Length: 176
Length: 116
Image 1 (cartoon, chains in turn yellow, red):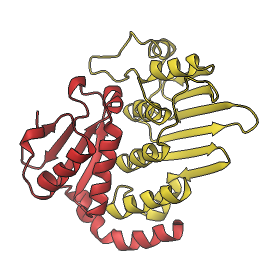
Image 2 (cartoon, rainbow over the protein chains, first blue to last red):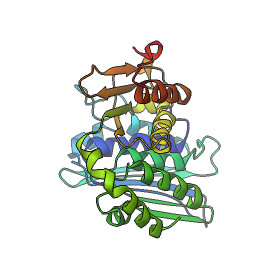
Image 3 (cartoon, helix red, strand yellow):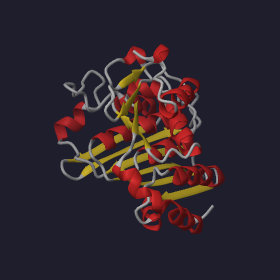
């Protein structure tokens, strides 16, 4: 089991990375008017056909030989569905994959959000070649980070340069 | 913290970028499959990234990989160093990760008690 939502995010995004995505968007949003929280992750990775998209949601299926998709998808689906939410996965081969999970934020079994900051931090710092677009708007906070913009400013200095890692760490502490 | 500061970083960092791309001396690879993440691999990865940043190890790259198929030993970490055999560490936590950075990455002495 994943102990918190930020671990779920980490796990799902690893599938996007494995699928060769160059752009990955992650949004965690809570509607201030209702108690619905949503998590949306979309990528431009290799995508899946309909049969594979169905199978990766099944906990008893894995793509081993050299398992490419782990239990992350069924675990997230389980968390969403047991906490009064919903789960949808749409994918197209050659286009990418989009996962959307919603949760009832008042449900007693909803795991805590966990450390979103650390999840964003390690994803960016350990995948300097990927353009992450991150959004966190929960409880009055509205954080947006578009790594493509940073990449432009950095003009060839990689995102995982020690100086940039230090900047990223401070930036997240200050803004997220 | 704003994008202006990123520009300053760019100017400061640009000179050692070429060097770094040509010869990353060491690659630290953290296993981030479902079982690794459930066992705390994110904090291990974070520790490595932070240590490399803090110590300004411009010739070290921290990255991640998927499922390693050895769930009982997660979080697992591999250290790839040019012309040396790969060293695999198991059951790593942030404190052990800091020791690996100091003893192995910086001082070149693999921490045999964590190796598997």
